[in-house]
Length: 168
Image (cartoon, rainbow, N blue to C red; front, side, top):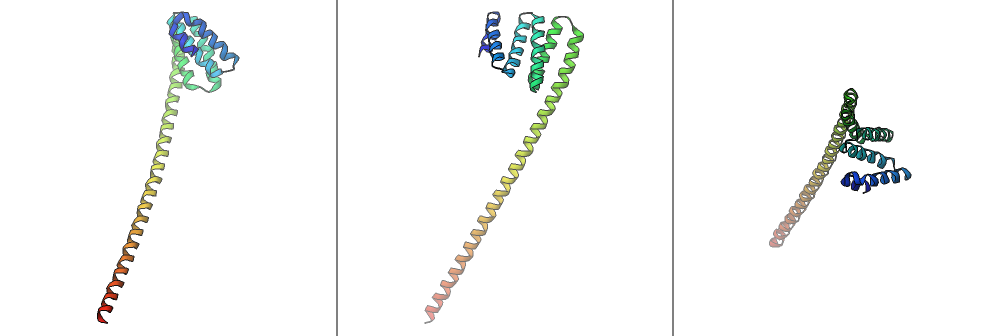
């Protein structure tokens, strides 16, 4: 909440963002701190403070990498490339963008693999469900057939009994 308010306030919210980052640091909320670094970097870029943005990006990337937060790391790398570009360090910006693209590709690959695994699991579940439905229908059909046979037998017994009564 502090971070969102500070971004909405622009420069006036800088104190709120710094306070939020200090609280996350004291609470040892490293994931929150990495997210706050991304917000601070974006805010710094909007205020044309590329040096500050670069420092936030580097700290956030370090945290995100240590926590295994690849999506946040990719976001921070994109901001880092923007900061390098704003500073006129185009060679560094290109290098970061290349690393960003490699990371983004691996994230997309992981996402595609997850979606495929989810689809396979859904298909297996649907197949098991269809088999259960088929088995249920087969059982109902057998019960219906057995009931029909029982009724036929009962009817035949009644016909025979009626014929025997008529003959007596």
